[in-house]
Length: 151
Length: 151
DNA sequence: TTCATTTAGTGGCATATACCACTATTGAGG
DNA sequence: CCTCAATAGTGGTATATGCCACTAAATGAA
Image 1 (cartoon, chains in turn green, orange, purple, brown):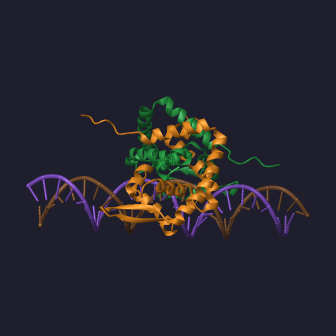
Image 2 (cartoon, helix red, strand yellow):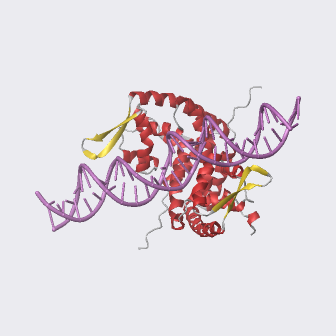
Image 3 (cartoon, chains in turn red, orange, cyan, green):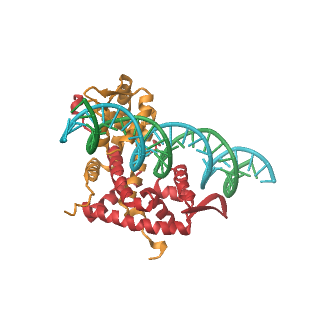
C-alpha cells in the first residue's frame, strides 16, 4: 500500500476520541466562557458539589483522572476561592474537598450556561443519539484492558 | 431535588467524552510506552506521514486542533529529531512538515505497538462496536454548532 | 510496641491544548 | 507602486493531564 492511500486517523479509536473531545471541548468552553470557567472546571465543581465533601482520591476515581492531575487542576479553583480543602479528622492522610459559598454561586452561573451548550448539542445530534453516545462512552470508561493473568 | 440525588456527570456529553478519552489515552499510552512516544505523538507522526509534506495549518485542521497548539506539540518531536519543517517555496508564510528518516523508523516502531493496542481494544469492545463508535465520533467532529444566522 | 507495608497526597517535570497579541507574507484595490 | 486586509505561524501564558519520587499517616505483622 502506497503512502498516499494509507488510511487516516479515522481507524484509530483513541485518535478519534481525542479529536471529538477537542471539538466538543471547544464548543462547551465557548458557551461557558462568560462564566470564566472552562468546561473541565465546571464539571469538577459539579462533581465536588454532588459529592459529600469527597476525598481527592474519590474524585479522581470518579473522573478516571490521575490523583496528581486532580491536585493540579484544583489549584486555580482554590486560588480563585471556589473550592477549599480540609483534612479528614478520622484519617489525616485524606484531604476532603468542598465548594465555598462563592464556588456554589459560580457553579450555579456555570450550570445555566452548561444547559445551553448541552441543549444545543442535543438539538444538533438528537437526544436519543446523545444518550446512546454517553452510554457507549461510559462503557469505554468501565472497560478493563488488562490481559487475563496467565495462571 | 436534593443535592444527594442530583445526577452525576453521566448526563454531560462533554464530560463523558473527556473521561473516556482519559481512560483510552492511558491505555494506548501504556502500550506505546516502550517506543517512548505518547499516543498523541504517534498519531501526529502518522498524520504527517500520510500527508504530502503537509502545511501546519492543514494538519491542525485535520486534527481539529488549534494551530498554535500544534506548534507546541511539534516541538518535542523536532527536538528529538523525528520531524523537520521547511518553508513552502511558493508561499513563505506556509511552513511544511515532514518526518526525518529517524522519525520514519520511530513511527514504524510505534505503529507495531499501536496495532497491539488497537487490536486489544477491538477484542474487548468488538470490531463492529468500535467502528460504530469511530463513526459517531467522526460525526461529532464534523458538527456545526453555530446558530443559523437570523437573516 | 516497633518496623515494614500500604495508602493518600504533594511537587517537579513534561506533554497536550487553548487563546491572545504580534510578525511576516501575500494579495487585492486604487 | 502603495496601502490595507486576510492568511500562516510564533511566543507567551494558562489550564489539563500524566508519571515519578517523595512524605506523611495508618495498618498489620512480629
